[in-house]
Image 1 (cartoon, rainbow, N blue to C red):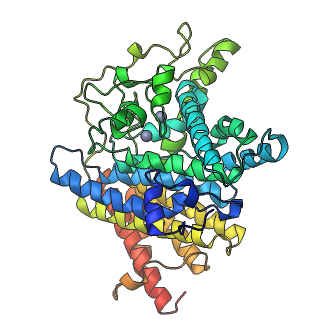
Image 2 (image 1 turned 90 degrees about the vertical axis):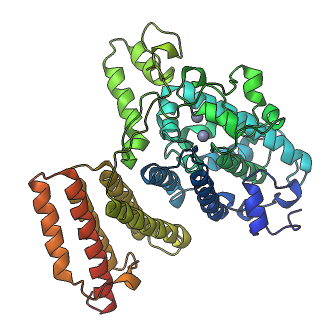
Length: 468
Ligand SMILES: [Zn+2]
Ligand SMILES: [Zn+2]
């Protein structure tokens, strides 16, 4: 049944973003044949984000994404897929296990009926995954990552959680009682991909489609921190679930995006994990075991004496005048962060492309390096006093990994003829010295930037000269 269209074609890749594949071209007998739709869609993510940026710049009233926010969102997307380097997704693993042992029916994998039933089943389960992610604090601890941007644009869609898949798998198991894993493996990806294009302020209203489908208009409400937006519009592809279960809200007042209590940082591991610590600390302030447990199992706004979901009226009032966090920073530092982010993206891409050919140790080393890089760039964007020191450490790790062949030099073509190894030491020395003197944050970050550029070029030059 899957012969009609090459699943890897550009057309299929693009249409997969809008749930515009037919059963005929996306049904598979074997799990190994199911395309990596999310991976295939990466070029379209980039293309559409650039298009949104250009149109946003032309339309002056639109909010233009900032470098800090955009890079943090893409970094979250990168981190969220790191577990896939080491294992199959939790959702699919658990699904196959239940299908193999407990299935009640065996719907045919090559039937359009099976395809459409699985679509409805997966979307229905997604509604409950998403609703519980907002109504159970321990699951919200992972999902809050997706809501942590104070902007709303296509890059926000990529701001995904590292830990959410460790709880979401359980919600899809009822589908495993009847629908084959290959059909599920297609729909779990298409459901996620559909939710990319709805993260935009550029599309205002889609007329009759608003009745049935989740749209940019409905999903904007979901990302709002205005009181009328809280715990509303959970749907994935269809919005009918919200209409049915009483969680639908129409967009009205200006939506202010982000968390009720903004985190005001671009430090990537903090964005991913801070809420677990928050819950732990809160639970310790309560005396009874019941209250301690309720901190994790009731809504994020719950406190003793309140109803299960707490009282949203207690949240800070939204005035519409809120300014997203993002202190100004010098242009050279912006260029430095963007360049090194793109280099880390290259390393990340190589890692996924070659993971089968790399040793476990190299995979672990490269993963650690990518995490260190994203963390360090986050420190620079936050302009922390320790940014220079961390960035210097990252440079040392990079040099060491390149020296031992764990990573190829990425800047060899940019190696400057005047850059030599002693300069690395000089700049690293300056960076550490200035860190210890606790000079101004901005200066430290610039020192770090200069240090690392020199490191890169020196390593690349040394490499090309055969010195290392
Ligand atoms: Zn949500
Ligand atoms: Zn969203």
